[in-house]
Image (tube, rainbow, N blue to C red; front, side, top):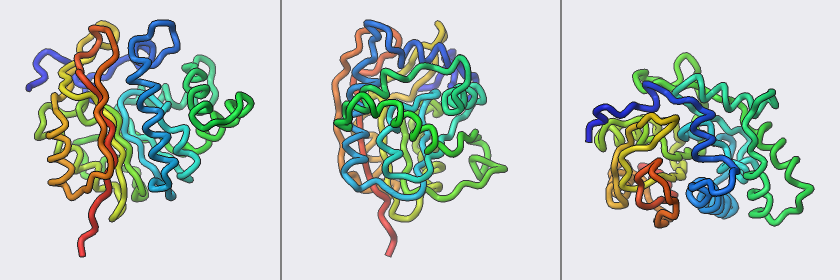
Length: 263
């Protein structure tokens, strides 16, 4: 599907706070509580705690200025690098990591992350401080460059984490695969990936504006990973619980995989 009149995240951008208010806030009745917090945070937490995901560098490529899935990651990676396509999202993340005035309040996710870890409430502030310290760089990427982060060179990652980004920066399924291939070059041989996204989705709304998403299904995801040399270690689909017209996905998918090493 061509994006048509729909905007593209990495080209047109959106107001980061509008995105967070719609999809990540703590307000009562927030429709994406399951898809933005409870389900993915539990899945990422369990994956990190499995011991299969650890090392020096985790590179996160996620839509918007989100951080809620990374609380457990700071226990297993010394450096967390966030890649973003727009300056607006970079500024929004840095407001939070640098404790600036007007930063988005993520305390509701800190509470959930602490509960998932089985820690007492007294650990919440420490958990947030440690995540902020673990996020060592927030870097802009450009899909038109051979080195996506030129002029900055990044160390190869032990793990790549994708959340809703490939579908937001690709015009169609072929470009979805090409963009995955570009990011995969940032991964060490034998490295691992985590993937979270919405299936069969074509758009999402931010600030009343409609943005394009590539429609893909479970079979498309499995085929892409297999064709790109990845072995899936876990894949689960969760049916949509959100009741809203802000986005038209029908289910969420969480997947982990590792890159086969050539002999």
